[in-house]
Length: 159
Image (cartoon, rainbow, N blue to C red):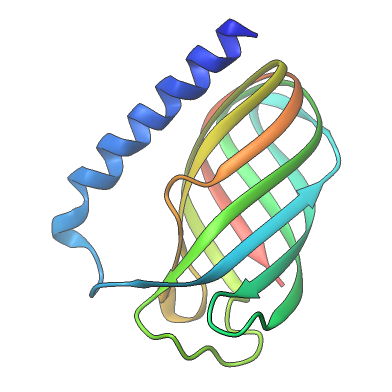
C-alpha cells in the first residue's frame, strides 16, 4: 500500500511539472464548466499498451445539467499488470460557460501515469473534444485496484 501511494504521489509531481511548463503555450483562460466521471471494468496491460472501455457522465457546474457518454481509453507506452474496476473523475475546463448538447464528444490526447498494488491511483492530462476546445483537468482523480504500472501516451475517445 505504501509503494502505490509513493508511485501515485510521484506521478502527480511529474504531471505538475508538465502542466506548469506548458502554461506559455496554453489556450485562452479556461473556466470550470463541470465534471466528467467515467467508470469501467478491469483490464490487462500488455507492456506496450492497453485499451479500456468506460461509461461516463458529465454534470454541468452551472445548472446540474447531465449527459451520458461512452468512452475508450487507449494507452501506448509502458502499461503492465491487471486492474479491477476503475473510476476516473475529471474537472472539465473550457473558454466559455455555455455548452451545446454533446459538445464534449470527440478525441482527447495527453499523458497518463498510474500505479496499483492492491489499491492505487494516477494522473491523466488530456486536451481535445470539439476543435480541441476542452481540457480534462490535468490532475484527474483515478481510483483502481489490482497490480499495475503505467506511464504512457493516452487517447480518450468520448462518444
